[in-house]
Length: 540
Image: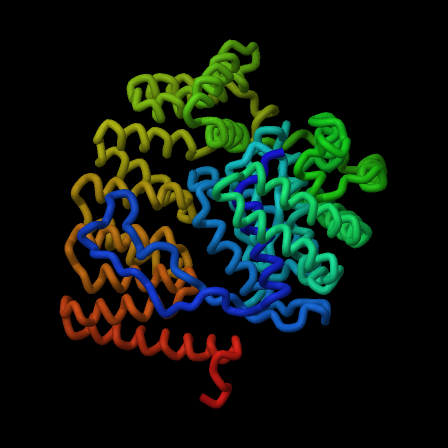
């Protein structure tokens, strides 16, 4: 079974950080590119900035602190976001985070331990998608939860999808990674060696890398399986509680277990990825079936939003929308349009609209989108609830962008933001439409406000740097790049960018003073970071 590059990056970083908490790469050399070479889609930002890894102390002691978890989770996410399999379809990002945050809110209403939003290092809970047809999901320290597109495509309903997300939330709240960091350290050495070889090999020969990794995993997993099963049962119980309190059909969890069994025979060679990483035992299945059988909320009316089905279609095209796969995917959507189900027809026409956009057949995309929206109005409220969605609006704005109707794209995006201010899809699109329509100052003004409330999102700093580059404002361009590097944990690179910004001489006295103050602040933070990692004496 193919494993994505993200898989090798993820597991290797975890084990390297846990076993050898030392800086792997020095941060004393950073390539700085001329802002006039900035691409229109995303500015070149000096390549991949090296990052100092957090010092997690002695893993044999058992648990990681909340601070260590937060650092490790952020470290892993920096690498994942750079991977081409990290899905940047922001409509899908919006959906998975809206659904995930609804489930987290349910966990907090249930007062599930570990879900509390208290303290600076409490789980942040960010959900993201990985472009991979395998059926899998995973939780990282600090509250980051990833889902493969294959899982979205497989799920029959939102309750099944929510059961997986609830399960992963359970792993985070119960600190299973932190609690397991000191378990099986000897076998972890075997696993580390094979995974590092896999990470090195995957860039040139993914098939060979898979073989290298599996051998080490087999030995390590065999030694740690009883712990894993305990953690899985605990996460199941948490996920079940979350499903219940948020109003989803509690049958979603046992139903998903059954789908996993049917998707491939549970044998040594054909085990679904989710089962490999989340051991699916008969005890787990029986436990969930027993809970469901005795639950007064069983067989609730299925709660499926229209967004679930539209995102399922987007997941299909994300994982099978390139090269020769696109033709096969197009045939799949055509088949859906010939279905007797209004729901399947709606999905099929929406899928064909997305295919037409990729093929730059704009009139066809518009035609298919209109048909999909018409079918959506015919869906029964007993079948779909809620029916309101802005996916059609954003897709219409994307079509307007392709037709160079930038004013329409701006208006649509603006209306979505008024109703859904947290929508990243609408935010990115309104900035892109401002830039493309020659309203760079408006785009920059919007981003300046956005970065005041979302300082840790690299997307906004990338777009802001692009706007300043178009205005040939070198000081602010480099200052924006500096903040991008701060988000990546590359403080020396950020400091260097601020030095360049100050040396450019552009900007008024107030702006240059702000740059100097920020540089001093980052220099202090970097010294503290070096002390924490043992690179400077504490009294320095």
